[in-house]
Length: 398
Ligand SMILES: C[S@@+](CC[C@H](N)C(=O)[O-])C[C@H]1O[C@@H](n2cnc3c(N)ncnc32)[C@H](O)[C@@H]1O
Image (cartoon, rainbow, N blue to C red):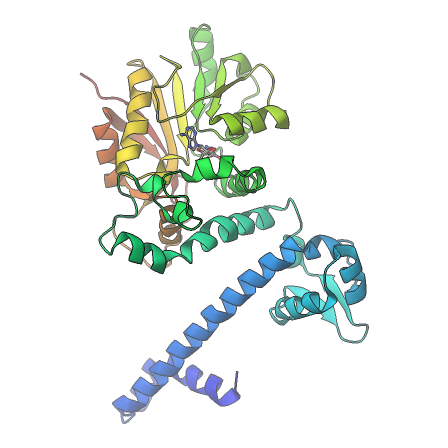
């Protein structure tokens, strides 16, 4: 960026002080400086857009895996050989990530090397899985926003009654009428990447430490014939694995993992869970087959849906609950009013991709009430800015 431009922006950024010290600064000068700052803002966004797509291209080519993790530098020719990729393409893409400091380049030897940041983008690493999910499922869908609005009209509600079948994620490839999960089921690689990303997301939210699961052990002893815990839409069992890790005395044969058939199939083939756990294919839009369990648990599923479908999912669980059953909902709780630096505002837009939404405490209260449930307690993490919480609910007392 030209130095004069940077200089002007810096003046603008401190213009409040500047105005106090230079009350004579004209309105038109201030407007000019403001335009400069807005241009710098747009330039930063442009840079981020190109950087994101470049990183994804480098991941597809396997460049981060090909850079040595032992810290030894590697030439362009070697990289091209290891990735079977066009050397000129690699060089142009690498220029971008060298410019941002993500990858090291030594002009003397003409070699590239990992930084601590680029190491996180190697296959299987949490940042890589999270980034790929956000790029492939969120960004690729969100770039269709203008067309989606043109197609559906300006008054269309992205979390309306049929939004899970008419969302950005289905619109983008002409899949309206199917859900994102139908689309994923038909594409094993995308499905597997999605669940790796989900695991990364799940790992970013605490599994344990917000809600005290230890009373479950006593409940199991109280009535050994009763199902202890049903994880509805539990994916490949990441949550259940963490529950068993932290509470090893829980009877695994009283735990149930439910999800769509292809996901349960993945859980079977992962073999990460004890074989005594029941792995049950179940569509949560249909009546809950396990009746009267002590605890039903649904984590990071309801925000995939608008209120109409989320209420129906909850009502199916409510219909299976006994008066003393507990429902645990693990989700974000948005502040009622917009606040500065609100990460959850981003998550809410991310949820639009599949026709869902994040919810405030008031929203949760209304949703549960419409499904015949009521909130007993909301368990929140101590301190920090985390909005992740466990909502403990039960059937409305007659
Ligand atoms: C965002 S993931 C959350 C997974 C898991 N609960 C966790 O916290 O990691 C949503 C899950 O809902 C599952 N799902 C989507 N539609 C479903 C349906 N109709 N019935 C059951 N599970 C479904 C998906 O397969 C996926 O595993």
